[in-house]
Length: 335
Image 1: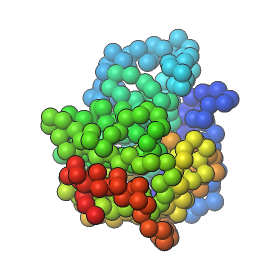
Image 2: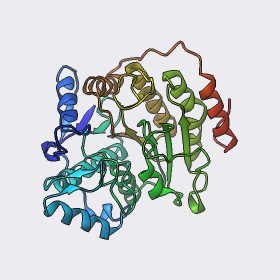
Image 3: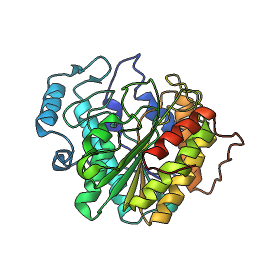
Image 4: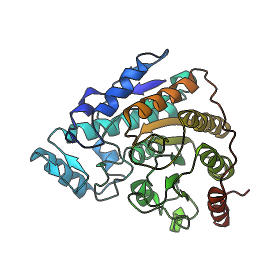
């Protein structure tokens, strides 16, 4: 794969005990050193006009001034230092690079993956939250739309609901947003009956699973609901908001997705993009166990280098089946 990466993203210093630390990127880079076919691209900063397409300009100006004044605690979880502004515009720029590269037809072993931080999917139109300041995936989608895409799909497999991405596109018909997330976790959004409104009606799909959902449950959600819905939407670009905190060994969730499971989900996204004749890009979100994060990102890369992940033998759980039935009742997929 081609990985977008810039050292400035390490300068966003969240403190010694914060889970979203620069060590996340360092761990991923160490793991990728052992792999064949890894290339790095240092894309430029995001154009702020693109950012203003998905965020309130007054909020962005306030965020920049906050960093210029030395940063601090934006809220209880979301921390900035002076260098956070530079890291955030670099991270968003990497996401835009990944989207534009995919739109240019780059695929297969050269599929782009933006390794930036701070992450983005909790940043709403006019506020930062949940470690996030600029919504990287949303800016990437906006960049594709302002180029030559008619429709973009975003699939968010982070264990937390991407409330910011949903918020930004909830009443827009040009972006389809789908998420699998754990019930009871931050930020508490992402109900199954939240399906979009206005021009965005039926372009928002939430699969809210109970704690303990495993790889088989995740793959069922993709196979039965998410992939068919995205295929019907027929996007020009598919962006994966790739958080790895649903891993069975991640320290802040209770889901049970395996490393092989992330490979299987990646393979499905690759097939889906090919079936839709859409570009495919990845944008890093969460994942807070350094070993599980780095192993999972490495597995995503290996899928594009020819690795065929193992499929689980487990049946779909009863809890997951009930959720998928509820999703189907909203008009997305069926058993």
